[in-house]
Structures are given as C-alpha cells and as structure tokens.
Length: 473
Image (cartoon, rainbow, N blue to C red; front, side, top):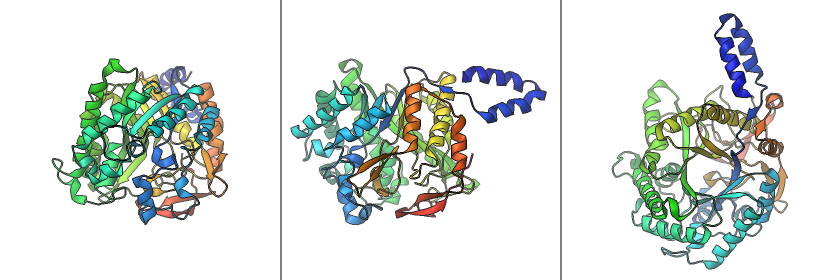
C-alpha cells in the first residue's frame, strides 16, 4: 500500500502546482506500513543482563563500585532471574508474539576454569531446558556466544588482546554447537566487538576496568585494534570450521553501528575515525564469513574530541542517545551497498522509563526499515532491545529499555507498558497504522521524564534526574 502511494506522490511532485498537496499527504503519514510475511520480529537479552546465580566479572565489577545505579537497588545481583525462573520472560515473549528470541550463553558459567572445552554439564542441561521452553512456544532462537562477558581466567590471560584466546573461544564455541545446534536457528558469534574493545581496553568503563587512551593511537599495535582483530580471527576460524553444510544455522555478528555527526566542523576528523574504526573496521575483517549482516542501531552520536555531547533541538533517550530514525535508513543503505548481504537488525530500542517516546520510536524506525524493504534491500528481521528492564552494563539499572517494567521491591514483579501492546499489534499484523501514535507522542510534551546521563553527555548517574520531556518531530 505504501509503495503505491509513494508512486502517486512522485507523480504529484512532478507537477509543481501540486507540490503543496503532495507535501500535505506526506505530512499526514496515515498509510499502513506493511512487512513481508516471512519478516521476523523479536526481542533480545544477554546473560550478564538477566541471569541470576551468575558469579561473573560484571557482578564483581559492579559490587566493587565501578557501576552506577547498582548498589542502591534492591536485589541487584538477581538481575531478572532468567536462570531460575526463565518461564517468566519466555511467557511474556510468547504473549508478545515474537518470532525470534535472541539470547546468550555465559562462557564463564559453562567453562568456569581455564579450558578449551565446556566442563559444566549441569549448565548445559539448564540451557537446554531454557531453549526447550522457547521451542515449545514456537519461538526461534538466535544464540549469542560472546555478549561482552569474558571468564575471569580469560581476563587474566589479557582477554582479547591475547591471540591465544582465539583457540579457547573456538573450543568453547564448537562444544556449544555440539550440544545446542538442534535448538538454534541463528548464531551470533560476537556482540558489538567495537564497543567492547573501546570500553574494556581504552576507557576502562567495563571489566577489567583498565583505561589506556594510547590504545587508540597506533592502529598496528593498540589494544583497541588488536582486540578487534583477534575477535575477527576467532569468528572467521569458527565460520570456516562449521562450514555451510555441517549445521543448518545462519551465522553472523551483531555489530554496533551509529550515525556519527560532528559537534563542530573541526570535529569532522573524529567522525572520519569513528566511521572507519567503530562502524566498519571489524566488519571489513569478517565480511567474507557471514551468512547475513547483523547490526545494532540505537541512534546518532554527536561527537567532539572527548566523545558524545548533547545538542539543543534533538530528541534524546533516557540513556542520552540522540534519536535518529533517518540515520537507520542511511546505515541500512550504506551497509547493503558496502557488503551486499541480507541484513538483520539484531538490536534497536530506546531507554524510556515513562514510555513517552517508545511507541513513536518504534513507529519511526520500523517505518524506515519498511522503506528500505520497498527499495528491494533484503532485511530478514527486527529485534527490539529489550523485553524487560534489566542491568545495562556500566549504567546499571537506571536506563529502562524494556517493553516491560520491573518492581524490584516486589519480587521483581513485571508491569507491561503500553508499548508492549503496541509492539504486540505490530507483530500480529505484520503492519503498523501510525495515525494515533504521533498524537500520543505529542500529548506527552511538557510531562516529566527521566535522564540517566550527566550534562556532559558521557557520565552515567546513580539515580535518574527529572527533566521536562520535549516532543520533537
């Protein structure tokens, strides 16, 4: 339906007298956005975000005071009890109607001491039980092997700066496939290796917490580049080992892509560097060993010499990210042009504790995806981050990305937000009628909202500060 209307609009635009009429039609934006029947909708989480009874480096890092908005929360180490009560989340996902659930397995839980094999057989059994719960609901599984969490023993080896870790990872990965290949449909080897390398080996914001700004200077030997190269080698080796015929599984990565913009004209060199080494460096290293290209997109990064900054007149999430749906279409087009692979949006979402923005965010981003599909760009699916509010890395529990809220003082009780039901309708109909969503978004203008980022645009806060929400079309 939308494609036909676009063709009519093109005819209108070819006649100068009718341009105002065409622009009026565009501004109404009331036509439905339709997706192919085989387009997959999903949600995602990660072990370090949701699993309880997990004694991992992230929990140790947070308990030592390195993570904001953590120690001031009730039962922080229980996360979402996805290990002991996975049915709570899985039932919510089933009610939502998702086609695919992206989740991970924790390397340290399965390999608690230094080994190239999985040694915790009880953990294998438990993961199999969790996977069965999903399969019984007819939900496809997208499994992530490495989602920002190394075992303690691997950190002591130097983590991904040590090439010896490549063989250890491949041993773990091949064992995981031996046990789990029948359960999964898609395999993600690494989540956001660019972000992990930056925060773990440059800024020190993530475990092991050692900052080294010099790691960015030398692309030949800096830890930032070395870590990405080693992860790329590990991915390529695994892809070549399993081959296209050994398992009926599509293999990729979930790479973080941002739409970088310069804060001032003299910061354009920073944008050039970010595009080259954050957006494309890792992907260029693995481009010949992907069945599709998975990427995570959250928005625009307006940067200066120090990093991201706030700018007036731009909509931001509670986590301080600039909302930019147009940027998603731009990145879809550039990724397809550069790599000629089917695409899968493996993460996209917004921190929005009061649900003022999320429905409009979903509408605008899915609208851009539908537009890309109408241009014959193959997009396999869309995965929303996340189903339920969880532990968000060095930001702790402040940013609320979930379609479902959590009452941590009341046995982690789940509370569905309005956006849960909006996404549910989209999934069930494979279509969106956007007419009421814009009004809903504008009605929130002037209401209070939460912000988990300090005024410098970088530092996380222990407790969200209250601001006035501004609806920006």
